[in-house]
Image: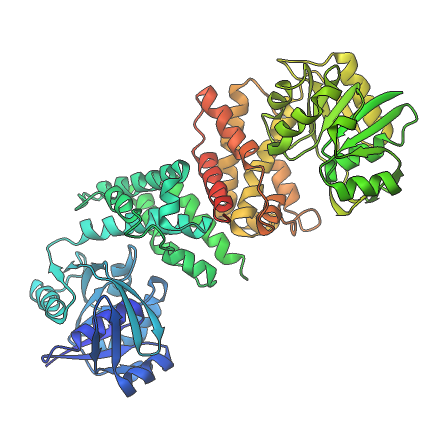
Length: 306
Length: 306
C-alpha cells in the first residue's frame, strides 16, 4: 500500500484524490482547510460527477498533524497558498516525492523550500466544487510529470506516480522535461484569463475583438520569448489552443477562472501567471511590458476591494 | 449683441453657458438633448453652485432647428457625440467660429467636417449636473483657445471668445498654438483615468502602487513621444500634474470620471484619450503599445455590458 497525500483538495485536488482512491494499492489522504469539505469526505466519501462519475472513500483532514508519513504528495492548492500549506504538511512528506499540479510557474521552487524531492507537473483537467464532498468534473485532460531539475524526485518515483494516476483514471505522462507543457499552459492562461478578468468578457468574446485578440497575441509572444530564453521548446503553439477554445462548441461562453475570482472578490493567481512570466523574464533579461501591465492592473483590482 | 451657442450643455457646457450669460453683450443659446435640463433652464435659468455661485437666464433648446444663426459655438458634448451634435446644429453655426472644449484629441477634426472656422480648445474646469438646471462647479481652472491649424478661425475671433469667457468668469487664454496645453491634458487624462477605470482605485491609490505608477509613467512616455513627433513642446510635464493630484488634499480620493462612467455603465471617451493618442501615433509611426492595450481593455469592458 502506497500513501499519497493530496495537499489542497479543491476542484483539481479532488479529481486526483477521488480517482487515485479507486486503486487497491493506494491509500489517499487529503489535506484541506475546508472543514465542511473534509467532514463530508470523511462521512460519505468524495464524489465526482460530470465528465466522469466516481465515488471513493479516502481519509481527509484539516489538521495536518493527523497526516501519516506519505510516499507521495500532489499539491493542488491555489499557487499563493502553497507555501503555507507545505509548511503545515512538510512533516508527512519529508521523505516523499511531491508533485505540483498548480497553475502557473514558480510553484516547484516553492515546494523545494519544504521538501527534497520535487516533481514538476502541469495538468489540464478542470472542475468546481459544487457542495462539500461533491465536485463537478468539467473537463478531462492530460497531466505531465517530470523531475524538478534543481531538486529532482527520482525517475522511478515520477513514473510510479504517473502510472498510478493513469490507472486511476487521470491520464498522466512521465517525461524527462515537463517545462514545454507547463509553459504552454501558463502562456495560454496568462494571455487569456486576465483579459476576461479585466473586461468581463467570455473567452470567445475576447477572441472575436481584433484589438483584444492582438493583445492576447502580444502576451503570448512575450511568454514565448521568456520560454525560449530558458531553452524551452513549447510542445504546441498556445495560439492554436486559444483559437480552438474560442470556438462556439468549446469554450466560447466560458468565463475565465480569474473572471470568476474577480466577480467573487477572491485573490487571483496573477503572481504565478503573468507575474511569474514577468519574474522569469526579468531574471533572464527578457522584457515583458504587457505582462507587467496586466499584472499591475489585476493587483490593482484586488487592492480596490480593501 | 453677439450670439454664442453652447453645443452640449452638460457639466462643462453649463459652466460656459451660465458664465457667458452673465455678460450684457452676449446672448447664449444652449443646445442639449436632455429635455428636462432644457426645460428647467428655460423655466428657471441655469444655476452653478460650488466653486462659484452663478444664476443666469439663457435660451435652451433640444430641437436644433430652433437655433438662430450664432457668431460663435462652444462644443462641450462627450467627444463621441460631437459628430451627431454638429450635424444637427451646423445650420446655426455655418458662418460662426466654433471652439471645442471637449476631452481628448481629434475633436477639432470632427468640428471641421461641419463648419469652416474652428478653434482648438482645452479646458480644465470640471463639475457635475446635480439636477435639471443646476450644476455643481467642482474645480475652477483655465481654458486655452487657438486657431485650429487646418481650418482656422481668425485670431480676432479667437481673442473675442477668450475675452468674453474671461469677462464672464472663465479665465481663458488666446494663444497661437493650443496643442501644448491640449496634449498635456490628454496625456494626463489618458495615463490616469482608465487605470482608475480598470482597477476601481482612486487617483491617489493608483499612484501609491509602484507597479501601477510605473504603468502610468509608461503611458505618459508614449504620449510625450507622440506629441514630440508632431513638434509639440508640452507647456508642463504631465508627471508633475499626476504627482500633484495624488496628494491627500488634492485628488487622492477622486474617482476618475472614466471609473464613474464604468460604474454607471456609460460609454467612455477612450477613443479620444488613449485611442486618440494611439491613432496619432500610428499616423506618425510612433509605437504606443501600452495605450493600445488600455484602449482595447476599456472597449472590452464597454462591450461586456451588451
